[in-house]
Amino acid sequence: MFHHSQDFIREKKSLLIPQVVEILDWKTKEQLCFLDKVEPNATIREIRSMFHKLYPQWYPARQSIKLDPRKSLRNEEILQHLPVGTTATLYFKDLGPQIGWTTVFLIEYTGPLFIYFLFYFRMPFVYGLDERFTSSPHPVVNTLKCFCLAVSSLACICHSFHYIKRLIETIFVHRFSHGTMPLRNIVKEWKAVKEKEDLEMSKNCLYYWGFAAWLAYYINHPLYTPPSYGKKQINFAVIMFLLCEAGNFSIHVALSDLRRDGSKTRKIPYPTKNPFTWLFFFVSCPNYTYEVGTWISFTIMTQCVPVGLFTLLCFIQMTIWAKDKHYTYLREFKDYPSVRMPIIPFLL
Image (cartoon, rainbow, N blue to C red):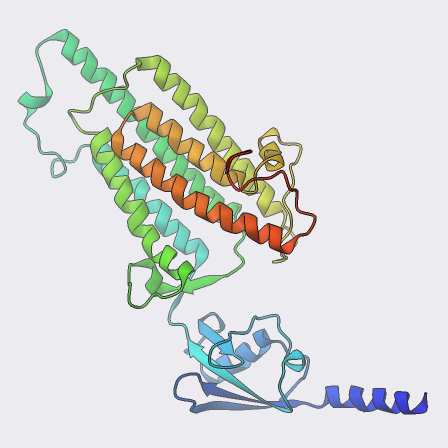
């Protein structure tokens, strides 16, 4: 009993002995700094702050602190829990200029909003068609033209509503587990981007902006033809569109509420009193289900081939994301509801 007490006291004292942290460049192995008298219970976040004081140009979000040249450490990891001795050797990698994820999504979603308007207002440099090809003295033709303009206007309202909703969610609803991303990933740099998430983010601006221009070009074209079934088809599509947008927003709020306390721990999402969240009974990612439904309704509303192709690509990409999240839930939670599918109830 006495020996156990001595061992405990000796161990406790050793834990309280300040440690020395040596930080090397991850590539050249050159010593960048030597931090002495670092508390054993210091976190990697605190070590980042100490390093930032010595090198102001490398703010914490720009730093990747590694235990070895390959493995990055999380902010919440504690020094004394790492497999190091009294002198800890860590490696630093410069991640480059950073940009907040909120800013990233604001850039991605603001682009389609304004690009669409360029085509909706039919700027002369966009179409440049002669008036004689887009006008007629016959009243039937002019009536059809007015109906086409009405459909184009409704499509513009729905498209704008969708991206304005995304902007609002980005600012007020979404909670991001990672605060920033490298600035270079906003544009497409195939050589600089190697990791899967970075590759996806590098494509997003071109993806959203490019498709917005392609869709808007055809929907607002002076020779655009309206849906085959007229007002009935449009009314059905508008109702479906609004329901899916409401459902998507409800799911995002429900997911955000899981991290209301600021926790980054993954939790199982469950339906709430909001009927739109009841889709959680059947799928793991109902936000993707509603998102796909939104673009299906937009395709029905506009009856435009490019919109249909965009919807198909959305479905493929969101199915991949939904499967990844679904299998992550199954891997992390043994009590995860077995009836749930990734994105389509009972099927997929």
